[in-house]
Length: 279
Image: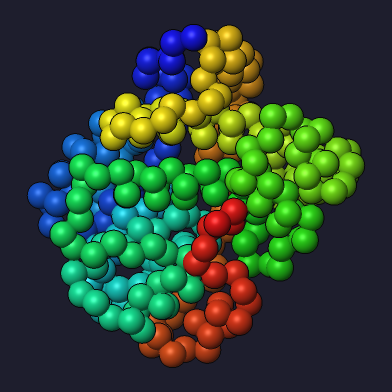
């Protein structure tokens, strides 16, 4: 069976929303031009922290590419990561090496790429894709301690991409009904919708990377399955778009603090650190 072409995923056009924050307009234009080669990505840009905050209040973003070194009188360079690092994936672009800052970025959930960034390589798109998939299974309220079963369900979703809810519940070790109720309470949406979105975006993003950078095609892209996926999105478009548009509650507005602030150490002690689930 021949693999599908990119147009098979047209129903996912611009569903992955990316914010680029850099004070050099030319750099923003380059990011937008290259990232837009993937039709699933929609890319916006901001030239300052206040402009980025305004866009985040207005729109839901799944991933942020942030140039390290932006700050102003009211915010330090890691303000956006501190406030929104639980709500979206941050990819930090840095021209300097600093172990302390790098460690702090990792503790806050960010990933660091050193300049010059190879935009035509697959590394950044893979981080974007991983961050977006993590968003699909992120609890709506990130400031509270995560339920153990939800943690296991998120890990099973990322590691196994279950074929159906029965397999998913079995891998978690609880009944389907209990998992459905837990998932709705914590993640804020129907279990079957989350599984569908993870399956279809896992396949679509992997297919896009294979098209642009080479590599194996995902094993989820048969024509019949693609048609079922497309039909499912058409029947449930309003609910599925609402999941992609849901706002993950950020942490309270952090004040300007040094890397040795007690808040940062609390993040480290909590164990909810930089590694996306499933890695």
